Image 1 (cartoon, helix red, strand yellow):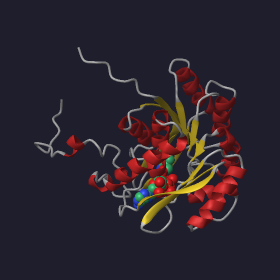
Image 2 (cartoon, protein in one colour; image 1 turned 30 degrees about the vertical axis):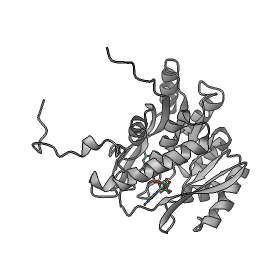
Image 3 (cartoon, helix red, strand yellow; image 1 turned 120 degrees about the horizontal axis):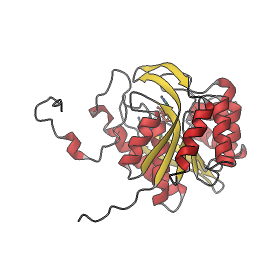
Length: 286
Ligand SMILES: Nc1ncnc2c1ncn2[C@@H]1O[C@H](COP(=O)(O)OP(=O)(O)OP(=O)(O)O)[C@@H](O)[C@H]1O
Ligand SMILES: Cc1ncc(CO)c(N)n1
């Protein structure tokens, strides 16, 4: 009889659906599978979306978001929550309540404050920014990109690593406990993110990959941090492994060749058997 496999940590992603599979819930579940976690999900919004952009957003009724969480958590023990697209004031406030007085009150949280897609479509209502700001103290780690940090702070986007330090500090002042400010939108040979917590700040560098396959990098990074957290002693160690893994996923994204716009990263880049050529070039219909 085969030996039992180790039990994977359970991650819950509360986020929007991306039918193209590169961002949102779909990216989060793939990331969990790739990194040895068990992914569960609660969908906050359906988007009609491809690698070329978002055409429609349909919010899930707040009570259905609540029911998804309550039904799941009554049965499954969730170890880490990742928050992505929360769409509206009502959904942000509902999720906040579940995280403070509801069944998720003791679960660690990674918050990716998703606001706008890579292609420029709004994924968070403008009037919901204050509600997301109010959620910051409940998150163990927040992973804003530069435009999201600027919106949360009511400031202009910064363009330098020095500027990142000031913004990260001001996010801590707003109540965030740990900040990973992602610098994918900066120029340069390195892709520099800034980690900041009560102990200070440290740049986290990786080589900048020359690729157009960057759809869903933020979702993938934040869910990788959630998936890896139970395997590490602290958040920063999980962040360092997540960033290194994401860099490899970016390195192999172009080989997926999905869609005509910015494609997804390769979540399963470590499974080389996927890279073997198909024997017939056709998939049998059975
Ligand atoms: N070309 C690249 N090469 C290496 N790392 C990159 C590249 N582009 C982005 N990254 C990294 O990906 C992570 C997410 O970065 P980014 O700031 O682009 O997030 P995002 O804008 O929220 O992503 P998205 O909206 O596409 O999901 C960061 O660690 C960033 O440094
Ligand atoms: C559903 C969803 N969440 C997040 C993003 C940001 O990449 C996206 N494009 N779509």
